[in-house]
Amino acid sequence: MKISFIAKLANFILKKTKPNYMDSQSDVEEFLSKKSNQQKKHVKSIFKSFDFNGMQVFTIGNKSKSKNTILYIHGGAFVNEVNLQHLFYSYILSRKLNAYVLVPVYPLTPDFNYSHSFKLIEELYACMLDEYDNIIFMGDSAGGGFIFSFCQYLNEINLKQPNQIVAFSPWVDISMSGEYSKYKFSDPILGEIGLKNIGKSWAGNLNTTDYKVSPLFGDNKNLANTLIFTGTNELFYPDIKKYAEKLKNDGVNVKLIEKEGMFHIYPMFPIPEAKQALNQIIEYVKFNE
Image (cartoon, rainbow, N blue to C red; front, side, top):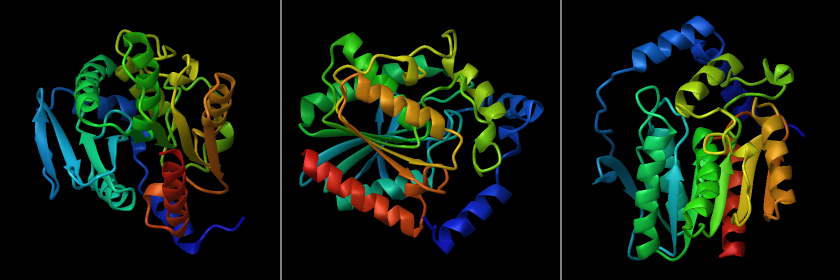
């Protein structure tokens, strides 16, 4: 299947701007060192936000008139902050899905690990359950992996599952235990060396194959209807395929959309393929309401 010229151009630009720390041990160590002990700042944006137990949470959409509520967990390899791409895409989702979107600015590594963010998101979600009926979990990349781990964790703490899950290129195995040589040069964004090091930092005292950080190795019972997008050229592609199969085996109603020749989190870029993906999300969400 042919990909659009704009997608090819985006792929070219992404390759040229790929962070060095993704493919270099020394660079990722230096990157994490520089990130350490940085004073957490309030993220400035045109979008409104509120403070929840010390965590900034962006809110997008009309709360009183929305039919759906989305908890959106942003990507960035658990080390990079929420950015305009995440917030603008959340705005699009709010308009197209008649949704009120909450985007938490959760604690990141290396100063924090999964446990700090799990605690805050658990508290936030518990409050959401008291206020909203139709809750959809969405996330991209690291955020996509987070929501699957978190949903597995909800079974452990006996909290209600969300109504639906939508994930873009979820990072489901932070141990990076798969075989990635085939995708090393086709992925313009990700790198095995950098991700493996960042994953260890995010896991803290946990083994990197623990379900709380790598949902690929967890139990998916009771998870909601799930829609996953992946590009066939991205580093995570084999792990995502493996996870989708595991979801099916665990009894989850999952739909995996594999876009030939596309890169990591392609639905979030201003390309024709993303418009098709958005229409697929709209159709899926409305069908499962």
